[in-house]
Length: 396
Image (cartoon, rainbow, N blue to C red; front, side, top):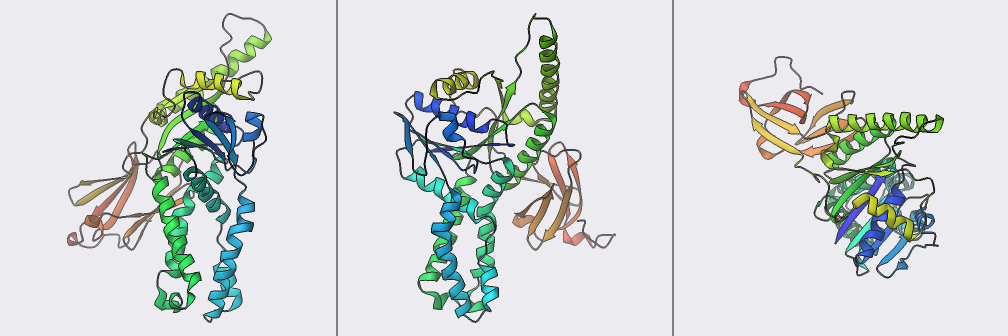
């Protein structure tokens, strides 16, 4: 089964393109489910049909659903949260501390992802197309499994510290199941043979800048991007004259300049397709299929347009030690912070932080410098036998 995640800045048309892709797959006979995790729930508007939390038939091979993450929080998480709070308080923690320990930021996103997986596994689908929320929400969604895994490990990974798990019975088992489930979600997201992202943008400089940052954040998470879609490209005015044609020509010229910058920056290594702006909002299967024809032509919608994900780390020998390249698409203005945390490398780019486990070869080494290059972030590490850093500290 393939899972395609569509995301992009709010208002770029990702819902329409997700629905069009799903419609195209279903039209060729693939059993397809399209699910919206976007709180705006505009997937029903794209099809012109009412949709609920369970899959509804749109066409013979196409079903659609809209996940209500708040309802999931009310029905699923609150019960487990109360069990955990009672267990922690019963183990001697202050009731206020127990309450704080069971507050998990972003749990609604985690439950939405869990629901996508449940829906995907409960049907005959060969492809699941997910209309995600805007990029900020999507990045939180995709980061949650790793963050939750660390949270559970820190809170429950050392039973002797609290003396709890042996006394928890059913609650302890629920925590273990939750941890295993979170780990499996992370595995699903980071397997490019299963899950890839289609990033939607409009040809505007602000949107393109966010798309670049999103690509970097996804690379940090190890999540593959198999294509970019530039939506709402103005049609070329041709030989027409007049004020309207002049406006179109000026607008299209500006859009072409943005696309040229994207190509020059190397962002198009992830593949790029374009869709022209339409005078009428596309609603319903016939209009969505017309968009899919323009978007994919005769190509297979499941075929990646470009690279999915390259290995995040590349290690090479250097004169005094090793050179570690973290493959990221870095903007010249990107704010980068680097630190060593035990056997992990903490990399922060524009506020997105990831702990990357260092290869065993590099764990005895210390960081002596770092610089950005076309290949990404290059970290220089020195073997311990070469002596202390003349500056006395590792760079951060």
